[in-house]
Image (tube, rainbow, N blue to C red; front, side, top):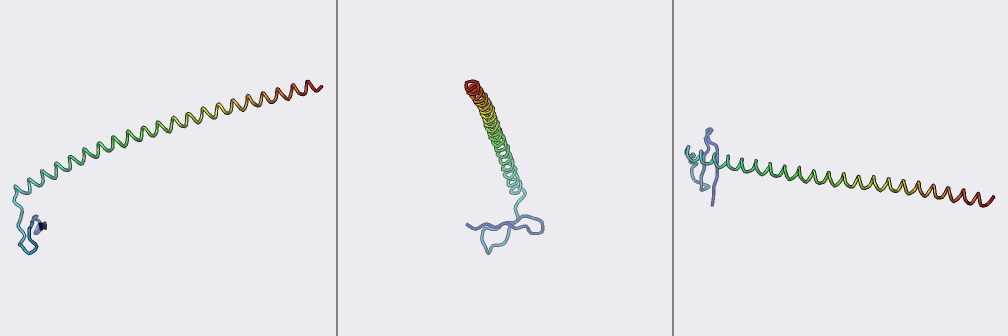
Amino acid sequence: MYYEEKIIDGVLHYRTLPDADFKSFTLTELTSELKKAQAEIARLEMDIKRQRVLINTEGQRQRERIEKLLGDMQTRFKMRGAFNRALGISEALRIVREEEGGE
């Protein structure tokens, strides 16, 4: 099926055959097309809002995951630091004991 639209002298026209003359839309037809376009715009705006909510929700989830990972890493580093300090103290005590026993 063939269909073409064209604006002629500021008025929207159409034709359904390549060699046919263009016919202008009636006011009723234009109003109907306007209502369809407005409904489609409203639907698209709702889709955009839903997508924004999904993006914000997923972004918040990702931030929470990152914060948890950072917290876990900080805890591990603190534990490692405490372990290393304890190991250092233990090693120092061993050395002191050896020196005391060696004297």
